[in-house]
Structures are given as C-alpha cells and as structure tokens.
View 1 (cartoon, one colour):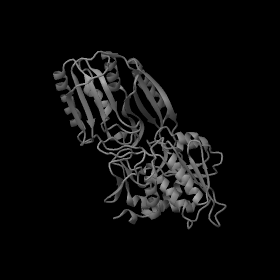
View 2 (cartoon, rainbow, N blue to C red):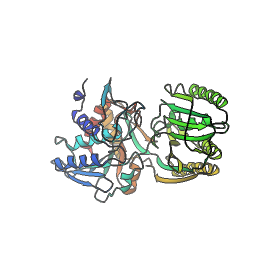
View 3 (cartoon, rainbow, N blue to C red):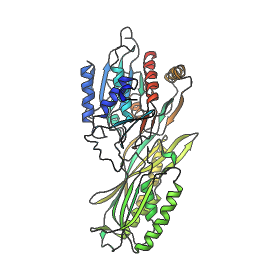
Length: 470
C-alpha cells in the first residue's frame, strides 16, 4: 500500500504536510504560521495569540445556523525523540513516514501522530464544505507536551462553544471523560569538585522500551536513570565525572550514561556486572532489547566530590518513581524521573508527578522534596496543572450511540492518566461539555510510535457524524 492510497485521503494529506514542518515543543512558530495560512486560504476567521495558539472559526453550513457551537481541539507540538543511530535533525528534517502492515510509523523517530493526527482531523473537517454542521471553532495549542503553555495562556473570551471535542486520546473505541493533573518537580544539586582517583569506568544503558510516562507508567518498564543509580549505589569511592539520562520529562527514560572514578576498578566492575545481570533478568519481559555496557575508560577533567556523588546517587536510588496507585484498571497516581542532566554549576533532574487527585499529587511531590533535602539538594515545583474531573453528560451518550451504530460495540468510557488540556479548559470554560477520543496510537513519545490506518478511518467517520448530531 502506498501513502497516497490511505483513507481518508484528506486526513492523511494534511498529516503528511504537518510531518514536513518542524514542531517540537518550543519550536512551533513554523507550524503555527502554517495553520494561520490555512485559515486565510479557506477564508476563515483566525487568531494567533502570543503563545502561538491558533483559534479558527467556520460559519455553520446552510440551515444549521441555530445549532450550538462545537469546538475541535488538538495540540500542534510533538515529542521529538529518535533512536541513537538516527541522524535526523528535528529542527529542519521532515519526519519520514513509513507504512508497516496496517500501521503508519516513522523512520527511527517519533511519528508525531500525538497530536498531529488530531490537527489533521481538524484541518480536514474545516476543509470539507460538504459536511452538515453548526458553527465550528478550532483550538490548536502549543507546548502541550512540556508544560501546557498554550492551554495555560489561552484567552477564552471569544470562544463560544457549547461542546468541545478533544482529539488527543490514543485508544480505539475509548471515550475519555477525565484526566490526571500533573506537576514538574525540578531537582538540583550544586556541584563541588575534588581530585579524582585514577580508575575510571563508563556505564551506558540504552535500548530500553521507554514510552509515555502517563499512559505506560503501569507497564513496569525500566527507568534507565533509576537503574543507573542502582548500578552505582554504595560502590566504594564513586566520584561522578559525567552523568546524564533521558530526553523528555514526560517520557520514561530509555537511556542513561555515566563516567565515574572508583576506589577499586576491578571490584567495582565485578559488582556492577552482577547488578547488571539482575536488572536485565528482571526486565527481560518488559524491556527485551535493553543493553547495559560497563567498561574501563579514561577521563581528563574535573570530577564531583565523593560525598556529593554519593548523595546524588542515593537520592536517585530512593526517589519515588513509577506507579503508585491503580484502582479498577485506572491509574490514579504516579511519578517519573524523566531527565538527568548537567550544567556548568549543577546536576539537574526533572520528576513529573501525575494524579487524578490534587492532594495525592502534591503529597507525592512533598515526599520527593523531603528525600532530596535529606541528601543536600533542592526541589521546586516549576509548573502544575489540575486534572479534569469525570462528569456524566448527554454528549457522552450521543457519542456512544454513534460509535455503536458504526462499529457494533459500546465505547469504553474512562479517565486517562495522561495529561489532557481539557482540565485547563474547564477552568476557562466551566460550562462546556467535553469529551476526548482519537485513533489508536501505540508507543507515543518513543521512536516506536505508530498509528493504526483503520483506526484513523473509523475515528474520522465517527467525528463527522458526531458533528452532524450536536
């Protein structure tokens, strides 16, 4: 099957155009301008705000002017992650789309179906003059994958929608009616140096599954940063020379790396190799491609003091990480240590904490903060957003009826542990009825990301009928 043979053609055409535009979180100017140009070419009312959000409006089709306004919502940014051997440059290179069986994926990079597919749905709807609909609005935001900067900055005073359809869920036949809130806890340790010992070793962890820190945090996958600390904890005389891991605060880290000096190279390597085998054995079902290499090396540079190195490693080793609470198949509370990096003066880490319940979210952050302070570091909440509390509405019944008519099954109605902008929109538009859905996307936030071709067709057909009926 060739790409131009995929249906619905208009959705896949716009998705390909989006895939040719840089749109990593924080680099959305080009794609935002593309959306503005789309609106102008189609003679739509359009507004681009200071956060580069784009709000478009389309008049009702003939005879439907008295219907309630419906807003379609998605985010234009994507998580940009690639495999270690990929030369892809997200700042300029188009995403190379591949067809594998019944899926579209990318060549060694994230695909950007999260949420480029939602944006493509919206553009296809706004480009369809044959569709029967009431007044339509589109809210396409920036920075959803980082701190939801676009949704936080949104001015909703000119948004008239009675219903909001968020196209940013990733499971076929699932209707999301609530989501977790989240916060980013930034952890820092000020560097202090001392003379290094002569023995250096290098540790390299790679090939672990990683994945979405909300949707896949219950899969018991290896956190490479946490495992790096497990390899090094209580090794005699460790001093950190280089230390890093992860690429995104909302992705389970699949890589980590360190160069350290040790008191006794031979015994350290022997102990670390033993721990390596334990980790690989424990994770062989969840992370079958994971690799850990340990080797002797040399280093010509400054190293952190032994006391500080021990404190940092012990802190990572003991920090709350992973699934904390799950109830009736719904993830309630979790945390993910997603980034470990160095600046000239600091070791920095980022832990993303999620929960449907605000008090649980802040309590987990408080526990982490106390641990960090015990080891001499600092912890600060940099951003936080509330969840979208589950509510029963008539819109849910309409959506389920349509899905059952078209597919023969009821939708699975549930909340998600992923962060959705609906929680923030509820603060701006409290009376708007909201649901979230979307095509089947697997491996979001990782180079394994792929979207089901058939699911795109099913969900676009569903969206069109839903717009007709509300």
